Image (cartoon, rainbow, N blue to C red):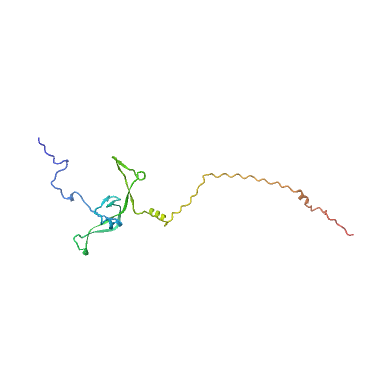
Length: 215
């Protein structure tokens, strides 16, 4: 008993001899992005035969040239950059010409970074799968930041540390209540008998001196 072979492994599809034009299946659009690698471009790029670019569509793409790791940042340009290419047919360097390729408004600025293992106690937890230990990686910028510059200037004596405002300590002891003022006693004054005796009566005409009458 013979059975017919199925025309397709999945229902709803049919076998064709040739595919149609690519325009009917997908619509592609090409974008050009310039890569700015700063100071390492004249020295490292000509000596590198290959590179690795990861996360081009992400916020922080990474680029690897030989043993150098670069971290990128998207920069939106106000104007338009024109992209040209060398004319491969021209062999005379004195009559070198370039051909226009495209224009772009996107640029990625790269900066050299150093890979530092992330500690589990401070920055993250280590992942352990099937006995293989996978340690997360942290990216640290090589270029000195503002804080590092300030620390270096303080060590070399170029700048003095910021003066701190003096702190006033608050006493926790409660003030003692002041004692109530005591009423003052008036001292009794006694008239001196001697002073009274020495007072002269204005009506007394007796004098100690005798009065003589000259006959």
